[in-house]
Image (tube, rainbow, N blue to C red; front, top):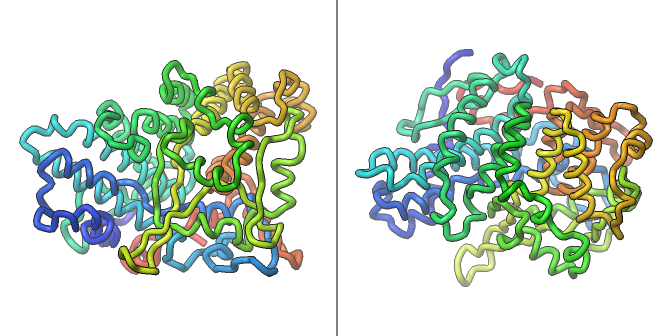
Length: 486
C-alpha cells in the first residue's frame, strides 16, 4: 500500500479547537504542559467529542420511514445513511465530523504523551500516561470499526485500515499510511495493554468522564470480542466490577426506571452517579432534540415489535415509550437530555450538547455472555442473560428463565448455541435502541438490512456490501488517501 502525503486537519488543529477551553485559560502557557494538572486537563479532550448515533442508527434496522408528515425532521444527515448513501455533510452527527473529532482527540493524547516523555520525572505522570494510551487506542478502534472492514483474521492483513497516529503533528503535510486493519489492531492492543495498568481512578475529579479502571476493562472486553479472543473477553469483562458482579450494577428498569416521569427519565440515564454508566462523553450534538423527530427512525411498529411483543423469555420488556411532538410515529426512549452551551453569558445562540454513554455495565454483561457461548459455557451465558432479563422483564418470575425448549421454539432451530447468539443480539437491540450500538453487531454478524420508503421502494444492504464502510472525508481524498470502494 503506497505511502502518501496526508494532512489530518483535525489533528493539526487540536491546539486551536479541541483544547481551546483549556488553552484560553492560560494563553501564555500553551506549549508548557509542565505539570500533572495541565496534562490531566488536556486529556479531558482526548475523547471523541462527537456522536456516531446520528448516522449509525439511521443506517441500521432500528430505522423505518415514518413519512413526510407533520412533526417530521427531514435532513440529509438522516436521509443519506438510511438509503446507504455517502453523507457529504460535515456537520455534527456526520461521519466526517466524527472522523475529525477522533483525530482531534488522538492529537490531544499524543500531545500529552510527548509532554510526559519530556518531563523531569515521567513516573509522576503514570496515571495520565495510562489515560492517554487507552484513549488513543479507543479513538483508533472506533475509526477502524466505522471506516474499515470488520476485523476478520483471514483478511485483516490485506484490508485497508486507517492512519494510526502516535506523534503530534509538526508539519502541515505529514507522511501517513492507511496500512491494514491487522496493523491498526496490533497498535490498539499495544496501547491498551501498556496503558491499562497505569490507570488510576484517584487521578480524576469525575472518573466517569475518563478512562477509569472499569471503563478500560470494558473497552478491552469489546476489543477482544471483535477480535474473537473469547477467553480474554471473559477476563476483562469479569474485571469491570469486583468479583465479576455485573448484575447488581445493571440499570434498575423494573424497580426504578419504570416509575420515573419523562423528565426524570431524561435526567437519570446519562448521570455519572448511575452505576451502569462506565464512561460518558459530552459532545456537541443535537441528537437529544432530534432523535425522536427524524423522519428515518424508530417507528411505532418497530417499537412495538421490540417492546410490546413477547420475547424469547416469554415476557415483555419494561420499557416506557414516548412520542415526540404530535406525531405518534415519532417513538423514542427517553435517554438523552440536551445541554445548551451559550456562546456567551448573555447570548441567545450557542451549541447543543448531548451526553452519551460510551461503555455500560449492560454491554459488559452481553460481551461476557457472547464469549461464554463461543467457549461452550452455555450455562454461564444463560445465567447472564437471565440476570439481565430479571432487571428488564415486566412482573419477572422464574417462569421467564431461558430454557432450551424456549430457545428452540422461538428461533426455530435445534442449534442452542446459535439460538443463544440470537438472544444476545435481540437483547442488545432492545437495550441500546437509539444509541447507535446496533450498527456494530450488524457489521460483526454481516446482518443484511432492507430499508423501505413509504412508497414501497426498497434499498438493500447485503452482507458484503462495500457501503457498510462509511466513506472517508473528502479532504483526505484530495490529499491522496485511498477512499473506500463504492
